[in-house]
Image 1 (cartoon, one colour):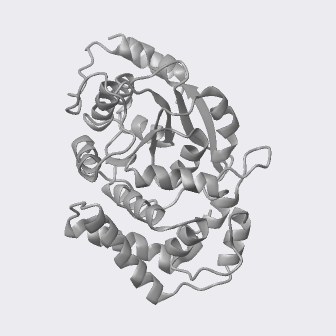
Image 2 (cartoon, one colour):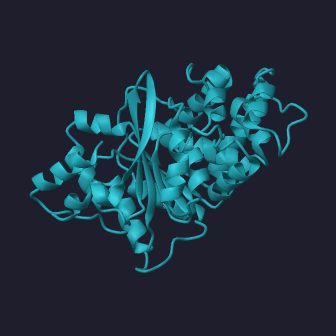
Image 3 (cartoon, one colour):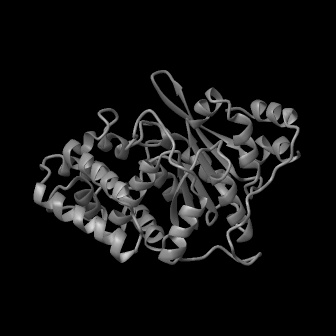
Length: 340
């Protein structure tokens, strides 16, 4: 929301902050350049809260214009920090632009953690963007696609082919084997059923996992200067995500922004490793926090994060039949929260 709201909340607070205990690690240690499978899952589970409720599963973004703020965002921030976000694939585009060393993606639904795990497997199993799109939608890879192909060329070419059930079954087994055997993630029967639901939705619905905007539209949008900055716009952007995922440095966490644990536990871990938050993508979650009277808790949670003057909120708000993104200075907006 606005800085005025945070200032008002800060003035109204009468009790102090109680940060969560840090993840067990030495003070002053640097962020790891790679996490073991065990540490990856420990951070995810230790930081997570119980599964929460949202009115839809939100398998893909509904924000067409979220790339518009990227040039300003890149100008405000520095690479090599920590990215925080919420929701599905739009996070990858912001990560590709910001080039962080570490990323945490929150969501109130455990289902979104499973979406992120599906993407993790696909990034790691795919050698390039064309392989990735082929696996994501269970479509055979057409000839002629290569490193110089644009996102528009990728999706127009794949758009002429049909999904293949044999490929879907083969890929689904590969995803499960990669997560549970290669990484040793102890997924429950419910988690496995959730992953099947997610991957089947991409297989059955194709680019129209969400009818509008569809996946091709999301990936071929541009910033205001007409530059496509999606994570599938270039092999270099895809390779950056593939590298982070392969090193277990994109961690999904189940948590309510206004909850007692997720943000605070992540903040304690980052502080213990001398890290600083580069950006926090909020989507339009703020409107729900306001509706549920969780503004105060959210503001105080954010105040426990390691911030500096360049740390930036990325927001979305509904306007004119779509979502418009904007930026805000995190440290400035939560100053009064941190002072109590």
